[in-house]
Image (tube, rainbow, N blue to C red):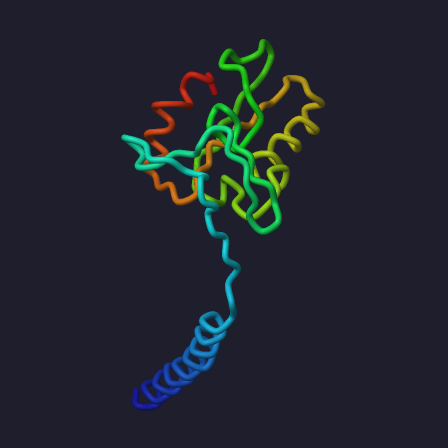
Length: 156
């Protein structure tokens, strides 16, 4: 029994040193390494009664050398008809800055990549429209509000 306790103690001690030996330097590296800054450009958002803030329709600016353009519908995307075209499948992406594509070109945002991939795979039959309703800093509550207030009318 004593031998088993010694082995377990040695194993746990070795694990503790291993964890500390890996995690502490990793933590220091992550704290030291500069992270990219993606500041939200002034004028991109305006106050909103239920979501605290919303994108400004018609906004145009630059983040990290990439143009940010907000449609007249208030989304980072092209203008869509409210009526879904016959034979078209419509997908809506809700989210924060990852969905919005803060710091990347609009065409590199995941909603636009998804649209391209689906249309290529389906050969445009049916056509697929993927709408980007992402807003930097949004959380699930704000996403719920935008779903109820804006998204439903586009018949996704």
